Amino acid sequence: MRTKQRILWTGLLLALCAGSAAGKASISRIDYKGWKGCWELSNSLVKLVVVPQIGGRIMEYSVGGENVLWQNRAELGVVEPSDLGKKWHNYGGYKAWNAPQQRWRAPDYDNYYDYAPAEVETIHTGHGDKEEEMVGIRVVTSPISHLGFQFERYIYLSERTSRVRIVERMRNVSDRGIEWSIWDVTQVNAPCWIAFPLHITDDYPEGWRRLLGSEYPDPRQVTAVGNVGILKYAGAIDKIGNGSPDGWMVYIKDRVAYVKQWSVRTVDAVYPDGGCNLEIFTADKAMGGYVEMEVLGPIVKLKPGETTQLVEDWFLSRLNGSAADRDDVIERLKLLQRRGLLPRSVRL
Image (tube, rainbow, N blue to C red):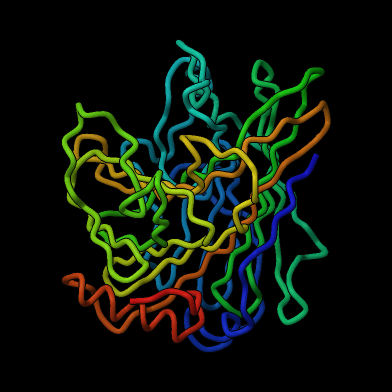
């Protein structure tokens, strides 16, 4: 069973992502911050780095040397295969987990296996829309045998814009049925602003809801503007989410915006955490001081050999200045909308 998905996409994105049109994209092998045999996808606008030694994570997505992905400095270059299944290494970057988290087993929690080595190969045929050519790699993670799955991660970079397409595929590699959701966990640098679509329903009277218990005081990081929620990182532990049918989030820090777009929510499907397909986690300084932009697919039953997938498009866009307050954020979101990076349905 493969979930039916589609991407929100407009042709305007091709020329307005990070600057003027660029030349050819390239793929190269590099050593990166202490890790060996990494893969770099780059064009004249942006760079993306994948580290096979720690599970095929994306550890850099940058424009002009500004990496939007958080990196744990204490873990740079660390490879500890003897820790697999015993402890979690919070490296940072982008990775995929299985959801719902409430079904993870103890004491060897499911994320204790997310840094097993991955295999990577070049995709020579590329992938893209008729208007755009892309280069790409295929990442295959080590199977997690007791959970019954492995991830296949297809990562494509545009030849001439900042666009990255990620096809995250979960495959049942066991001899039994399994039931999981794909959970994208993208850790970004803070302090920052995060904008996301509100979804006002009986379950989300404010357009979102908190996902942590009362033991964590509410830092009130989110305000509503039109049909958009704007989160200002307050340095506190918190998690919010909603079940928005619109698939987008925006990160703003300094003079760079990072836009995520993903597959439209599947109708009548069951999603984790009471119906969430969009979640934002904020970590305090003791945890590393970062934010997680999380996307969740529907919970899917997979027979042996079957797959489900989650498709995302990423973009980087330079801004005309940093955002000091909410009004500045609104102006920058309007700029992104004029550039075609936000849906016309966004009201600010």
